[in-house]
Image (cartoon, rainbow, N blue to C red; front, side):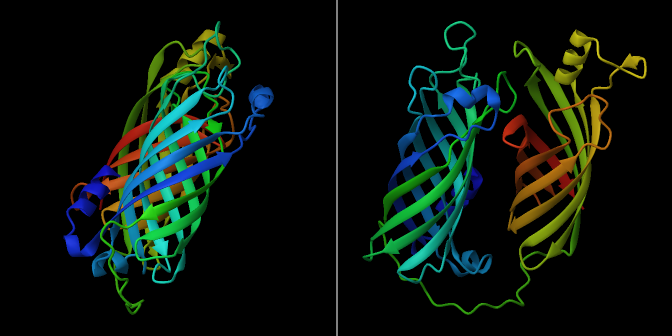
Length: 355
């Protein structure tokens, strides 16, 4: 994500508009588990400050027939329950296309990810009720959509809704993760306003230079066992094939193999057996997903189901949220969050090759 913003900063001044912004947020907490039902009553509130680059070059516009923004956002939230939940402060990078930006009223869609600091986490003695998060350093993932009204050359008002998730990615337990949708109202300012040019949509334009792509991926991370005291390695391999459909979309079919040593520790501690032998901690799962292909960047949503998993995990299905960047023509690095519904399982760094 930061590489994207570095690319934005490298654009010529005539094709880039700097747009800081400020918004106020108010929302609620989703009680996605009975464990946190009694502390999900509070109403989070806070504010967010953006620094963004609006890319107005013709090549930028071609990828989505829209004007994309990329930037950084500082996001503060008071969870409305200082004794148990405290506050969060996040710094995340984002990509955000502007839809119909030439009109006074236009739409935006944002995807963001980055680190988050939490100032009142779980403690077995002092704060046992907070099952949402137990690590001060965690990660935020969010998706938002907004309606904007440009009332002058430099200013616009924005009303947006956002679904926000904070989790430590399984580094420490308990880690149910906190989900808090918010409604936001704020304003953006264009430091160096430029007119939006009228451009003709050439739908025959080929933006992705291949019809299909095979990926081979290796990933590794550390994850706490169910007690949450010690972290253990998790290793995985993924093979997949993506078929391009449309201009910048792809459908993915894959298979992943994972060895989860945190689960192995839980199995050994509880003496779980399968057919008279210690239960296997490894699993194999097929994957089905959608790829959004934006030059060197790929954003993926994947759904997996455990095909081989003697150890019974939280759910029979799971999701991956993946952001990849091609550092070379066929080599890429990724950030991936695996989750069972609303609860993160682990966060990984991936390296892969396409052919």
